[in-house]
Image (cartoon, rainbow, N blue to C red; front, top):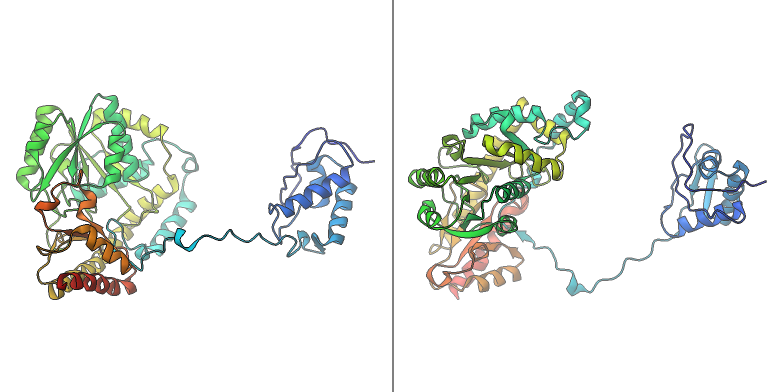
Length: 481
């Protein structure tokens, strides 16, 4: 006699070794028929796909709380109907073609924007250069050697192994002065900026001075909790005079390589910014944007090294490895450590295993070797772009190319405006940004030449020369018109 199911789902017995299966079986009615209908519905709805293996009749019966013969009879009936197959040694599976997948809804062609053929947007590296072998070695080592607590969330500041490694590495290559206990590992720069913004708001800093131009998403993150003072950037960097005249108690800046202008903050402007912080008890957030990549100049040390009590250094692996490696770090002054650690505890956790893998890559020397290799590749790309512009667009200027992964192409006087140039490039399937995209508000267009912000890191190696040719070809036609 069939047993009645009093509750569902029942606990899977510890002895079950096959796949688990969730079935909704009504508590009343014939048991065999109910199991058959539930299985048919699961196959029709696509929850059980062709080839999926089902539990043994013994395991499913125990899971559903019915007699084994009830499940065996249901399986036999569905095999006879063609829903299932049963072969010795292979078990019971969903038959091929038992449910044909519904055709995907057709979209109107105009609703699917095609990806640009030549992607020269700034701010991203060549993901094809990701060091797969080195990362795989580091991850294998991590999985083999990681302590048991690495599979828990652990200290909100991050794994101690990575913090120790970063402390030594950042001191060696960027001059950062940070004890491992004052480093906080986070999930990239955007999370770091969000954490800092929240802490500054809690400490009563009502206004942040942000470079103009700057990345719009970064401005939006800060603007979610603080008022924004737009601080102009010139050839020497962020304006100390405008910052002093504002109500800002926080300054967010990129001293090593300003984005998007590509300039480096002058020694005098650096000294002035530190004086502002001392005089106003202000905080400086140093975004070390693509600081790993420099070509024609000696490395410029981090501003943080001159005032660790007032400068918060923020870096990430998004440019050196790739955006998919969601790892960033904050070197913070002692006063900010406790509130930042608490903010990180409440935020999205950062993968402990990826932290250990990065520590292993740095300690083994693989990270340095990777950076040396991609610096050479990116320099070649930069040189190709600069040469193409200089030879084919002699009236244009290429700026901000001493470091980083992008360049500014300043078009000749009398060129069409940026909107017209951008539209012509889109028509040729070339995707770049304009300098106006980063200005807040977009003032001064009548006082400066139209300019493009061109990234040379994104295209794969084989496609890069074609992308540059397409870009320069469109600009040459516009110049000749």
